[in-house]
Image (cartoon, rainbow, N blue to C red; front, side, top):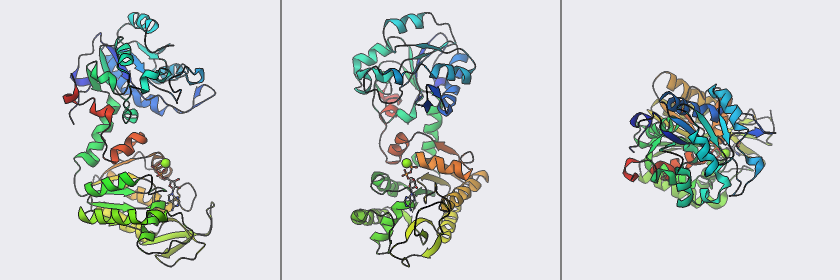
Length: 400
Ligand code: ADP
Ligand code: MG
């Protein structure tokens, strides 16, 4: 997909309305994790260096179109100022007279943060009148919030139809990484999908089997596939009512020449507790009270070989209950194997998903992956093959 970036537009003296994701963890009005603020820094710095006036637009939490003081973005301004090492003024509105006055007083390179855009019902309704009110204070729209791109809201989609639009640096990074993983991947391309439920990842699995050369299924959802193939699953988490669906996905994979990797051995325990005695079992040799909590060593070794014979890997969902050792082992070993291949220049590995990101950090290899997306819902919708409205609106064809 072709889209403009900050390199394609002139910046000097331009009022840049920049949509960022500042939905950061906060406690008692203080930012407790500034990862997302740091992620926005390259875009802001590039705009400042080019002499633009930087006007930041963001949402926080779910005020549902009402003014909720506890969801004000005011506490973000000092935290962002510390990250950027420059003043960040806060304006207690995001459209109208106060914003107009604040923007008029800005010099090139100045940064202001506007109030929570979701305080207005027009934001989530993607009301064109609200988008025009936002646009009145800008000459250029920069979208740097991939994580909000699955929503067609005024500040994530509507603005792109009113102002000249381009992708920010974080958006560009994310889109390029996703393109390398699923858009135009170097083949063979392999997927690993784990996590707890088949039911939340049906669209994802159905799409991936049509795109990938190989797909490994792990985690709790693999139990449903094992059950569908007639294996015992004991007291494991298993969506037995989805056995037909699992068989349909297996059929689809065959149709599209996607080789499926289901577990060939498993780690079981009688209870899910830290340090619980864990046993490795062959398939089909389970007691009624045993639960499958991780992938077995043979399964992990098979995945390692499959990764070594692939050029690209896309990963969502842990292979086991990684939060509770020793059931983190399969996930940790597979993640390290992928990281080693990336470090050796043999694999492009892209991962995403809330728990997946946590698992990669736990394994100590998040930094070694080619790209780790923190976008959550937007990343999953992209893996499902859906068109993200915020991204589509940036494409050159959809511009005025
Ligand atoms: P993500 O957030 O990366 O998309 P999910 O939310 O789909 O991932 O899945 C993560 C959860 O899946 C974790 O909490 C993990 O404990 C759980 N899980 C993994 N394997 C199993 C299993 N065998 N049985 C039960 N839960 C599992
Ligand atoms: Mg999750």
